[in-house]
Amino acid sequence: MKKVIIIGAGAQATVLCGVLSTAEEVSKIVLTDINPARVAEITETNPSSKITAEKIDASDVEQMSARMKAEKFDLVINATIPIFVRQVLQASFNARVNYLDMASNEFYPEPEVPIEQLAYAEAWETAGLRCLTGGGGDPGLTNIMAKDAVLELDQVDSIRIKDFGIVECDQPVALWSMRTYLEDLYLPATIWQDGKPKQVAPFSGREDYDFPPPLGLRGRCYFHDHEEGVTIPLFCGKPVKYCDFKIGEPDIDTWKFLIQGLGLMDEDPVQIGDCRVSPRDLLFQKIQQTASPKKQMELYSSGKLSSRLMLICDVDGAKDGKNLSYKLWSESPDGKAACDWIKGASDVSWLTSVPASVFALMLLRDQVKHTGVFPPEVFDREEIDIFYRGIREWGIRVIKQTQTAVV
Image (cartoon, rainbow, N blue to C red; front, top):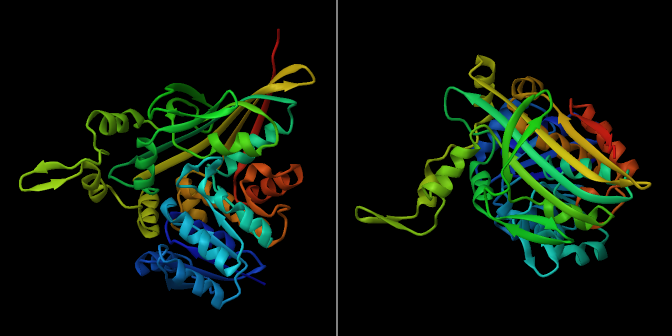
């Protein structure tokens, strides 16, 4: 029987607990957070006897290491915000426990290190441990979609990934960490061009894209600070000429105006009466916190909230001298269906944490062939097929279309 410790009790943990608590081989899930109230919000909506709650500070490496060493855990899942990646990763290594996370915080923090997790690659490989990084929706599912197409091609010309979500509510609501989202919108994005990384300005690369059903709309996207543009070309196993990641939503240009037009993410303090405060600090004090599981249940059940998310991956290249194009996209439950399935979930947490849960189960079942530090795009066809079967059990399908160029 397997034991899992989850660091962070936010939106991701709601779904992680919901999926993993149903797995026969998982006997115990220790759910932790610095805020006991956040843990209680999840345990109250998921009464599984497998889940126990504890208070842990994700910034305290020694505290986490001691807790991980005190009990023989089989996997650490980092479900905190990305600024705690190094701390949780180091604690996991200290305790010699396999590790999974869903995001990075630093891109190229050192020469030849595209994400901070890879700075630890040699130590994890030597120890024979597994660190699966970027194992959520995007990155995660998107990386698998890209690798699925790459395996079909002799030559990879471009990989273009998009995330588009719709949220309609009669009151302000956050289904995800707004702080992380705004920070990613504010920062330069990294794309892959001509065999190397390149930084581009935030809110550049504007594109109006036709999304297939169940979205079935034309939506605007911009380059976005994300892992895929730096990891996929390095780890997919074939040379890639171009790779990017874009994000969009119906209100994306409003965020562009607030961030670039009004400077609400600026860090330089401004004088307000007798005080000096940065617009960024003020904004982070005022933005909505991620809605609790019970709040989401209330909003979805009353019909006040509706939401749907889609991930897209377009891959162009050649096979046997013929140009080929692949379009892959996700079909998954909308917000209400997700919340009905696992209490307190949303379409966003579903499309992130169901893939994360399947990655976790693959690690626990020894179905992952790799050791050291690696992203999902290292998977081979057998591992991809196992992953696809896992997410289908939870209502997520990947649709793939192929088009041959006619000259």
